[in-house]
Image (cartoon, rainbow, N blue to C red; front, side, top):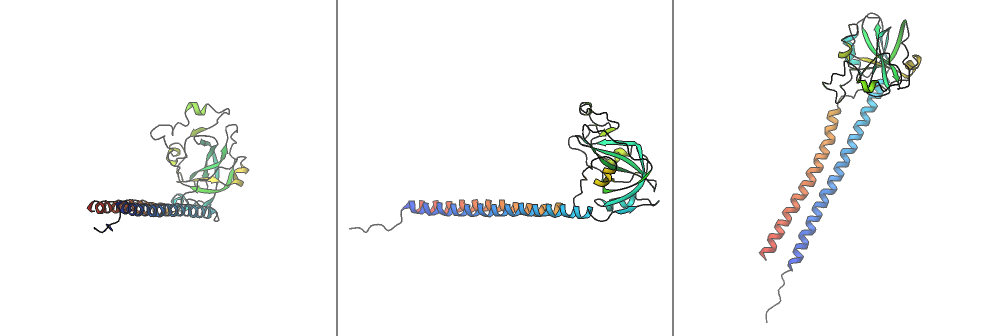
Amino acid sequence: MSEPSSRPAPHSGRFSVRLSQILLIATGIVLAVVMTGLGLWQMNVFESQQANTAQARAGQPPVAWSGETPRREEAADLYGRRVQVSGTYLKQTQVLVGTSYPLRVVTGLRTTSGETIPVVRGQVSQTDSVSDPPAGEITVTGVLLPSDAQPSGMEGSGTEGSGMGSSEAGSSSVHMPAAVLPALRLEVLAQTWPEPLIPGYVTLSRQDAARERLPAATAPLPQTDGGARNRSYALQWWAFAAFALGMSIVFARTVGTRGGGSDSAH
């Protein structure tokens, strides 16, 4: 009489293979989720640090630009800092800037050094009237910023030199006593404004804007150095997450191939 076979049932081997595959893929998913979370956390930390650094720079004591010393060469080093400038407004240079309300009110200031700098005196809504700039010599304080970027969708449209389209400009119920530009681009202003033009513009503080009877405009603070590098660190975590998930799938398929070959051999 023959002995009963002690070989394990085939379904037991297949169950073991499936269990190993599930555990491998589950491990990959857990690692991918953890690494994705670390990337998001790191991105948020970096953005918070950048915002705090930009605010701290803007909160430093203002740099006084007084006297007859030219300031054009100093502008790039002071972007994001507050500057104090003295001069006389050039009423004929006043323009409105923006693609939607509220619009920024920008007027050229002829400084005591003989240069011209754009000053964002404040902003106006669709129902507001634009106040005239103060007459005579005045001292203003605000954040110095570089030229605005070209608005998306307006490259080569030709609207930057001519202001808003007629349909948008005509939607206002208030007479606009100035041209309307989609962005504050210094190379556009330089075509008609008195030279030399300082390569930057000043956005007045809330107190200075109130003295000119205008609500303050928001100054778009520039990003601090290292933003691209910091974002790359977060992207590395996400790349690791994709790699971990992909390798878990590869290992699971390898286990399945070996398990299938073992079953067929029996």
